[in-house]
Length: 453
Image (tube, rainbow, N blue to C red; front, side, top):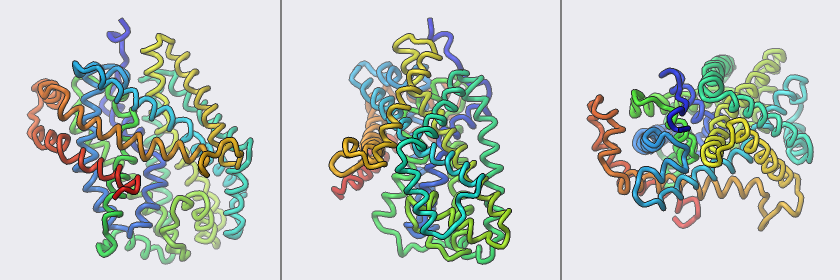
């Protein structure tokens, strides 16, 4: 039977780095800094960390429990833990969400490769208007973004076909340390710039006068986005955990790594931004429009250093995108491999080719093709909206209800305590969060994103 031969991660380090790699992505290096900038700096960070501890970690543990107990892909896992097979639909939602995100996430990942190329050949030096026009011209080009997206997907494909230990775990052990080294190098260079102290102060000096319901719900949403909750990634990776893996400790370790990367990303960006007088609340354009100008101005007296920092920064972005895309790809690959009995290579190839097609259409929609515009929104924006603002909160909410109310508490306790080998002192606190606190919080996020509250 296939299930008896199911692959596992080969070491505790592999478990932590692979799962942390799933969580660490553009959400940390791109979305977290601009969210922090828009919501007043350190006050947002405090709320974000509180949300990770009270809500993110319990939700991650829940997905761990589902995946490891079932030892199956996300769709099958949900259906196997309850007598009511309708819960399998939540698993299918996770697979669909991961699959759709893979398609359009590859487009943004491809932009990172383009910017490595542009940095390498000195195309990102010029006035702010030039940099803005550079991004607009590139992102609306009908061919180049697709080429980079396809290239990124096939790099991911190469890792996936190597399997769990030979591909995902091995790649994570190389990519995650490299990501940290690059991050620390850029943080060091950024913090040594003249006037960088203002950026550091902005990041760590809280201004609670700016805290309102929008900031709180923004921190709540970012904690789920950053930790890859409800995308199917965490559940799929947990199905490769051994029975000895301490689920609660792993969730805490991964969340700590994820938060450290996010804060370091702030230390990388804000000192440089304040050094040249750039507003830290530049929004989503921060990475591809604002930062090239920041690096160019901040290191104007040392052009070689600026060249190297810019190149390292986009290499860092690409690595962060790759670790996340690997986990997203694996969700669909594991599903096809186990449910359709395709070989792993066949399943991976099917996912790669299909996502290339999705990515191509999403990219072309940004180029202004009318057939790919729906109600004034590009196909790319629709994919982002449907997955990020509907599927993720709905999937997270239903997962909490599933674990808290549908799965027998004995199964939940057995997995939480590794069948009695761990003390599980926090089990009742965890169960309370999953049954009451997390569903209410996720519901608030969902209603807020839809503009209802």
